Length: 438
Ligand code: UDX
Image (cartoon, rainbow, N blue to C red; front, side):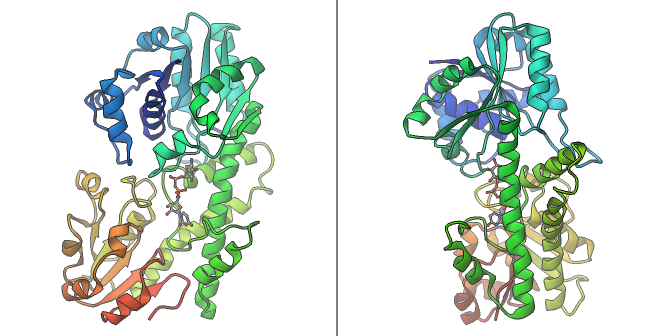
């Protein structure tokens, strides 16, 4: 079994580390945030992700995973080092902020004293890996190599996506480095997971191309949602019908309030910024449209709320179902649900919000809206209810009971998943984004 380090204890790093330890490797995790490291040492995962807490407990008990803030520990305990730090959007720019990647690489390089493999997993602008490889060579000499190994995990499915990915991509400069990574991923590869070995630039681009394609698919169907609203068509049936064409596929064609989270929005902006640096601004201008369509979805929901209230938000009670950017996650980064809640509150409405997981996080922050613990509490006296994150618990709400709690039984389903017959039979007026409501 291999001796691995994971640099960065965020979403990607913790998931990768725990899954690698679960596969039997010896893993040491480093982060600059000492509190986060303490939390993890105590067996607490600092975010919501199915299966992860159980696997952390198991791997802590078997001593397959350890946590540190010391680079000396990392250099002494591992031969393969996974870079899993964040690459957020730079303040005041669309480009990626690479300071964490740069700092991590520099710190690691200063502590390495023998042969090692550094494996980049963070999402970076194309060209970064070549630059980091050069820096490693300059500081550490010929015995420290870099491999670029992009990560495609989805929040909510992070463990399964790490243990059973669709593909493993390795960008290498030395073909001989492939064997070490094949050994790390042996269990996964033995399941038949495709392995693609390529150069640095292609490996970096695979990740951003995949995210750009997914974002484009969502904005494509959302543009058709507006066209469906303008013509009385049904965007869900449209997606079902075109999705039967296997060249198109049905997945990622769910119209609604749009995409959010820590990846798709910032990754399409960073890709466009990088393409512009490389003189390809015009070719990648379509990503401006993808981003703009996505941003406009929140306004569409707010307009729908205004229509249902005769144009007046003042003092109206609006209940928002969902705060996380998607279900089975407590991640509120760039969450469409939160953006809508904030816009409604700014417009003068009394906004209340509920989320099965993200409520806890929201309660630690100053917000322009009230955060509720239960669905009954959020629905009480509502003038309009807006459904924005497709948690299963919201689909299971009893519409008759909900109608008894609200002031006006008006539902705006920003995810197009609530059953029209069930809700209208209980006296609700329901509207969707891109399909006829009641
Ligand atoms: C995404 C990519 O899927 C993953 O491969 C990459 O590694 C990181 O970014 P994630 O951010 O976890 O993963 O979320 P994802 O499941 O892709 O959903 C992104 C957003 O798109 C969510 O807000 C979701 O609600 C929205 N979405 C998704 C739609 O609006 N419609 C769809 O049909 C699918």
